[in-house]
Image (cartoon, rainbow, N blue to C red; front, side, top):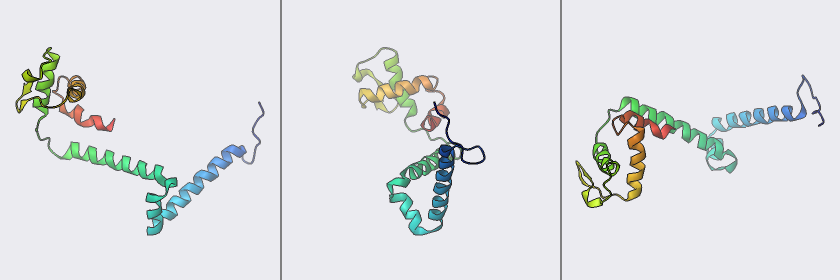
Amino acid sequence: MAQPRVVSRGKSYREAYKTLRFKKIIKELWNNLRNPIGLLKMFIDPEWFWLFGLLVFLVEIVVIISVIEYIPYTEIDWKAYMQEVEGVVNGTLDYTKLEGDTGPLVYPAGFVYIFLVLYYLTGRGTNIHVAQCLPML
């Protein structure tokens, strides 16, 4: 296998190209962020879609962490869902017999299986903090 040709300072052409391309992307990104038209281009140009997706992903992580840390947990239906799933765990598969504090189970079986996974991941529904952090994984 042939060795890559060396350009300067010990870099091959391939490495030098990657470095120049990265510098070009950073320069163009900086120029786009400084003017409104460039900023708009980042949101509609398919070439920059990866950056928009990355920004949305990072903002989502910040929002999820902020909500978990600073907004007190409000019990709505978690206990009822866990009671309904516990009925399935105990062997009851008849929908008319599955119920929680809010009434009978009215969701389809897919709901039960999804919450069955949450049931086991959260220590039988007791560790709500784990369930809140799962979207970040």
